[in-house]
Length: 371
Image 1 (tube, helix red, strand yellow):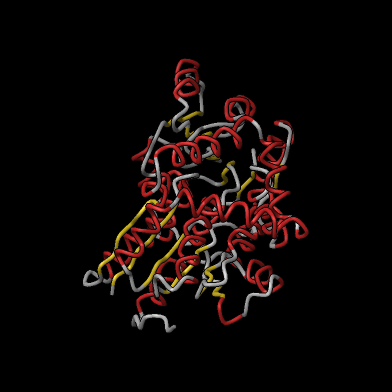
Image 2 (cartoon, helix red, strand yellow):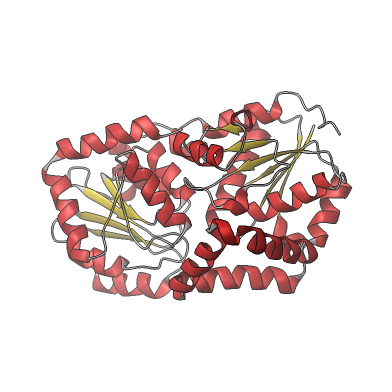
């Protein structure tokens, strides 16, 4: 069987989900031929760079404009027009990716980004490929761009997400609520005492992890200043070198500072809470670690949609002011029973075996799609 796992490098979550599936299949099914492909790398450089840069600029500096774009493409009366325009634009600019898919002629294509799914579905509709298409939706709420008629199976984050697809007219047999795939390291048991010794962290102090993804944006510095006198704070600055330098120079007590790291699961394992952005893949990692979250700096649209879904499950709160965040953290510190309630809610909604279940379904034989 030949499998292509494809993603788009606009936002790290799509890649992390694809990479988790790729690593699992390579480890558990070494006889299968599997490739991990960034769809944009098969497009022209102008389109690729514009796509990545425009996403980064809009979500970081012009969130209101991003919100407007999301609303326009989400609103039902406008969908036929916006979808047609976007589809034509994507098909023209992604011809290199389309040629690659036709040449590879894979049995199965797993997509963790709607752009890649749309191109695969288009080729299937034109009968240029007969691959089975698995679309892995990497948010808890569904934007209509994810919906493609030629998708054989949708993999979704929760039962609520499944209900959203059902309301869009997708047949129940085409939807599996396995969850969002993440690396298996987020499902392992960790010895907190050993990790605290390794990381130089006081295991007896209430600890909060503060992070906002690869850019290190948002009010991280303000949150650290608000909390460090009362609790232990672990902050991941990621690519924000200026923030990393400033916090290092301040040398605040009870604060551990990290740049880019590859052991975030260890930091999660030693903390009591996390303050972070509500990206779909990040949420799944957090839930698998039984780590109660406070969400900040949500991207309008997909991340605010994630917040609404999680609120229905009693998981995660979101505040605008630093004072509210501080009060919430200290309240949880002083009332561990409230923290335990959130953890119980997490255990009811989390999907720790998503990666395994998706790969099991994908790898159960590979008859090519008929027609």
